[in-house]
Length: 235
Image (cartoon, rainbow, N blue to C red):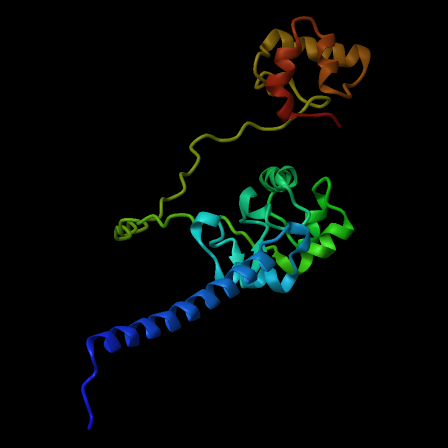
């Protein structure tokens, strides 16, 4: 005849279930540890596949892997020196050199530009190529400044200004070699006596060819010539 489960049997059942779960958890922990050892071994032994798994599955801020890791690849234009040290062949010195070069010469345009850093040759660059990328780093956008709206003022109505009519009659041109005493007196600084002296000199020494020839006459200097030059014609 069926009898109920005793207290001891109840305890044994729970203990067996607990042992089964403990075994499953222990097995999973061992698998995870073995996998972490394989992935996080020495930098020279990390394979590109293992690196992608580490970068994708364990992107914690404490490791410095945040926006500097894009789809499993380290962005050499954003990564800090601590993150760069995780790359194979890149120790603290080269990581600092990469950051210093980036700050001094600007971001790397392509992955190949990493070769400009001292100590990184073609062989090292080829081993790093599957694990790195060079993003296009753009300067932050300029904050937009709000401009207060002000209506465009209405232009004043145009009123044409009449051109003033000259009230003075322009002074006549003087033909020096044919001018009379009266005509010569219209020149600035030339009185009756000097006008007569010009005629005497012109008759005695011949016609004038240039304005400066008038300085042959006593009392006529450079200033008098400059004041009248625009009115003098020699023909």
